[in-house]
Image (cartoon, rainbow, N blue to C red):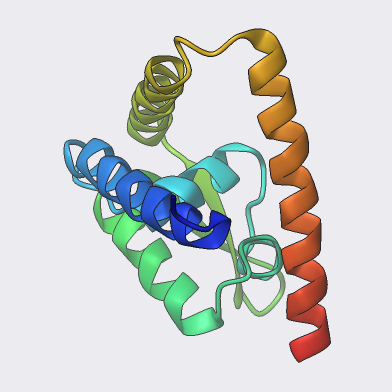
Length: 142
């Protein structure tokens, strides 16, 4: 039997592969899809997006540029000096995000179709606990 952390690494790789397949059908990367969801949720400036996604400025700029080029989001310069950009999800972006989110929910339903509600709840509790434990470890190392 695999250790818990070894099993989580294997699961993470499988999940990443499945997510890449889903997003690739819409000509997006997994990161672009997640960013699109943030923008669709009202996070509309680079500062807010960087803070909430934990992405560095250059990575975020590159992903935003890609989403603008794919017509998933628009950008508008605001302020007196026109240096701050506000990003808005387009209709194409909204539809694409909805389709990928629906596929993601379908995957979740398929993965857990034979799990009882109690099993799902227990897993959620344990994963939240693991998340907190891992976060504490990260804080200790920083």
